[in-house]
Length: 94
Image (cartoon, rainbow, N blue to C red; front, top):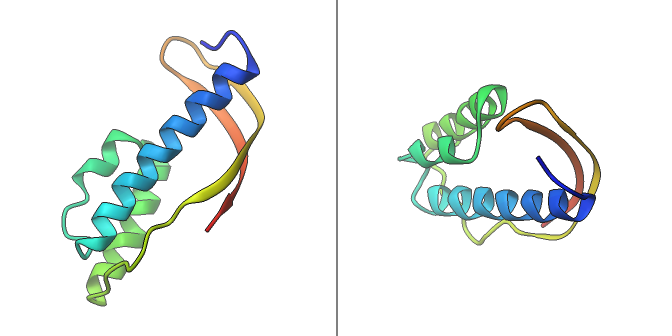
Protein backbone atom coordinates (compact mmCIF):
# COMPACT_ATOMS: atom_id res chain seq x y z
CA UNK A 1 0.00 0.00 0.00
CA UNK A 2 2.83 2.42 0.81
CA UNK A 3 6.03 2.61 -1.20
CA UNK A 4 8.07 3.92 1.74
CA UNK A 5 8.04 4.69 5.45
CA UNK A 6 7.72 8.37 4.51
CA UNK A 7 4.48 7.70 2.62
CA UNK A 8 3.11 5.69 5.54
CA UNK A 9 4.04 8.46 7.97
CA UNK A 10 2.34 11.08 5.80
CA UNK A 11 -0.82 8.96 5.67
CA UNK A 12 -0.77 8.47 9.45
CA UNK A 13 -0.35 12.21 10.01
CA UNK A 14 -3.21 13.02 7.66
CA UNK A 15 -5.58 10.47 9.19
CA UNK A 16 -4.75 11.38 12.79
CA UNK A 17 -5.16 15.06 11.94
CA UNK A 18 -8.62 14.32 10.53
CA UNK A 19 -9.45 12.30 13.63
CA UNK A 20 -8.45 15.18 15.91
CA UNK A 21 -10.45 17.69 13.85
CA UNK A 22 -13.55 15.51 14.07
CA UNK A 23 -13.05 14.68 17.75
CA UNK A 24 -12.44 18.34 18.64
CA UNK A 25 -15.62 19.43 16.84
CA UNK A 26 -17.70 16.70 18.50
CA UNK A 27 -16.29 17.57 21.91
CA UNK A 28 -16.96 21.27 21.52
CA UNK A 29 -20.56 20.42 20.64
CA UNK A 30 -21.02 18.36 23.79
CA UNK A 31 -20.51 14.94 22.20
CA UNK A 32 -24.03 14.92 20.73
CA UNK A 33 -23.40 13.74 17.16
CA UNK A 34 -20.64 11.14 16.93
CA UNK A 35 -21.48 9.85 13.44
CA UNK A 36 -18.39 11.38 11.81
CA UNK A 37 -16.07 9.26 13.96
CA UNK A 38 -16.90 6.36 11.62
CA UNK A 39 -15.09 8.28 8.87
CA UNK A 40 -11.74 7.83 10.63
CA UNK A 41 -12.20 4.85 12.98
CA UNK A 42 -13.30 1.24 12.60
CA UNK A 43 -13.87 -1.80 14.74
CA UNK A 44 -12.63 -1.76 18.31
CA UNK A 45 -11.12 1.73 17.98
CA UNK A 46 -14.52 3.15 17.00
CA UNK A 47 -16.31 1.24 19.75
CA UNK A 48 -13.80 2.43 22.37
CA UNK A 49 -14.15 6.06 21.29
CA UNK A 50 -17.95 5.83 21.26
CA UNK A 51 -17.92 4.36 24.78
CA UNK A 52 -15.72 7.22 25.98
CA UNK A 53 -17.78 10.00 24.41
CA UNK A 54 -21.00 8.45 25.70
CA UNK A 55 -19.65 8.78 29.24
CA UNK A 56 -18.59 12.39 28.63
CA UNK A 57 -22.01 13.24 27.18
CA UNK A 58 -23.79 11.55 30.10
CA UNK A 59 -22.00 13.94 32.46
CA UNK A 60 -22.99 16.90 30.28
CA UNK A 61 -19.37 17.81 29.68
CA UNK A 62 -18.05 19.76 26.71
CA UNK A 63 -14.52 20.00 25.42
CA UNK A 64 -12.88 23.38 25.88
CA UNK A 65 -9.88 23.96 23.64
CA UNK A 66 -8.50 21.58 21.08
CA UNK A 67 -6.43 18.44 21.33
CA UNK A 68 -3.40 18.46 19.05
CA UNK A 69 -0.09 16.71 18.63
CA UNK A 70 3.34 18.16 18.11
CA UNK A 71 5.21 15.14 16.79
CA UNK A 72 4.34 11.80 15.26
CA UNK A 73 6.87 9.04 14.56
CA UNK A 74 6.17 5.86 12.63
CA UNK A 75 7.32 2.77 14.49
CA UNK A 76 6.09 0.17 11.97
CA UNK A 77 3.47 -0.57 9.36
CA UNK A 78 2.31 -3.71 7.65
CA UNK A 79 0.16 -4.22 4.58
CA UNK A 80 -2.82 -6.50 5.16
CA UNK A 81 -4.13 -6.55 1.59
CA UNK A 82 -6.20 -4.14 -0.48
CA UNK A 83 -7.37 -1.21 1.64
CA UNK A 84 -6.06 -2.58 4.92
CA UNK A 85 -2.90 -1.55 6.72
CA UNK A 86 -1.79 -1.62 10.34
CA UNK A 87 0.41 1.14 11.74
CA UNK A 88 2.03 1.75 15.06
CA UNK A 89 3.02 5.34 15.75
CA UNK A 90 4.34 7.29 18.68
CA UNK A 91 2.97 10.77 19.20
CA UNK A 92 3.06 13.53 21.73
CA UNK A 93 -0.57 14.55 22.32
CA UNK A 94 -1.38 17.87 23.95
